[in-house]
Each structure stands twice: as C-alpha cells, then as structure tokens.
Length: 288
Image: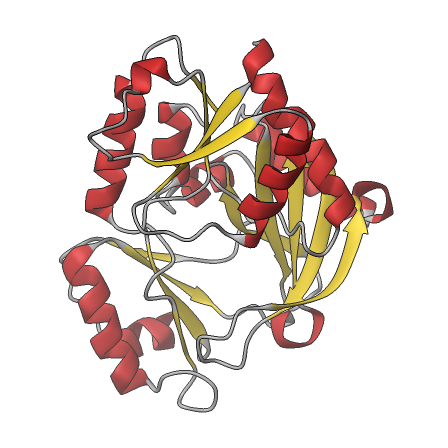
C-alpha cells in the first residue's frame, strides 16, 4: 500500500512524520512525501493522501483548499476540503462558541482594521495577551508590558503588520498557563487516544515543554469529555486524527484554545506506543 504524506516544498519531515512513517513501513506500506503544489505530481494516481502540514498564510490557504477541491473521488484524503477550509481559519472558534463550547475569550479583528491595542486592552480589562494571525502560527506573540513578551508599543506595531495581511485575534494569556500548562488532547478516529500537558517557552521562539503525557484512560475525565464533545459538535468524528488544546480560566475551568482537524501535533515522542494506533487509523483510510 502506498500513502502520500502531503506537505509543502522544502519542509523537513517532523518527528511525528518520521515516527509514523517507520511504523507504517514496518507494516508494508510505502510512504511518499509530496508537496501539495508540486506541478509534477499526478494526484489522480494517488490513492491515499495524508495531510501532514497546514497552510501558514491566507494565500497559501486558498491554494491548499483549491488543491483539495480538485482531487478526484479516487483519492482518499485524510482531511476533506471543507474541513480543511473550516479548520485553517481561527474563526472556527466562533462556531464552536455558538454551539456551546467554552472558548478562550477573543477579540476578532478583520484584515485592514486599524485598532488601538492599548484601548482594546483597557476596554476588555486585559493586560497580558496573545496576538495571533487568523491563519497559521507564524507571528504569534505575547504582549505583557515588557515583562515577558512585547510591550504595548511594540505590540501595536506587530498587530498592524498582522492586520495588513490577515485577520487576527487578540486573546488574554490564560491565567494558569505558566504554572499548570496546556493540555493537548489527541483524538484518533473520533476517540480520545492520548494527551500531553506542556508549559510555554520563555517568551522567545522556544517550543513548549512537555511535562506530562498520558493515555486517554488516564486523562481527567472532564478534559476527555470536553475534547470529544468539541469533535462531535463540529460533526467531525471520523477524522483519522485531530487535537483539541485546552487551557484553564482564572477559576480553573477548562476552555478551548484550539481545534486542529488538519495536521495536528501527535506528540508521538512523548508516547511512542500510540504511533501504532495512529497508523491503524491512517491505514483504515484505504478501506473506506
């Protein structure tokens, strides 16, 4: 069996990709990485396409979705085009909130807006926030009066740059994140598989540090139920893989920070044995 790992040009395989490829190849599968916009790929000949990267800006997102829409019925895609479009713009949080999910409070800003950041923080009563582009993860920064992240003046400049190219969202820094961390709950075939708890980096480009990893059965039941409900509420219950990031508010109540239905971090380095479960789900794509 041949599986294509869909990526972007000049992207090095992630640790998750390498782990999955090793398990799949041990079962007799052939793994071929291909860029979604490689003109030399004949996608009509691809039977199973596993998306292993997400678009990082609005233009790339449009090209990515257009590519997914062009795939014929003979190609089994791990993330259908409508899901790819929905899950790659952070406005999906608004839909989740409408359906009853407890999401992180958010101020939504449109491309081209000119918003005084200091006034926004005053009105919202926030003093420690995260600025995020609506598409992708590049340009995510923390603004905290210079204590940890950018000061408000630098944050204003950064926000202006973001809004010149994309929609953006401003969110308060979760009050318990620095001490208690963030739970990333991984779902396989719609069921909670495993989860990791990580602490943020030091405000630079350092990645989060995983401090705890558990199988689904050992996860706090409330967290597991919320993650599973998020997947069910979006009617996305049969994706081979997805993940829900959960943080706590000031009262310790879990809130949804992100839902990745396209190419989630699987955290296989923290729990190598679950790679076999994920591989089962990917091989199952060929059976549908």
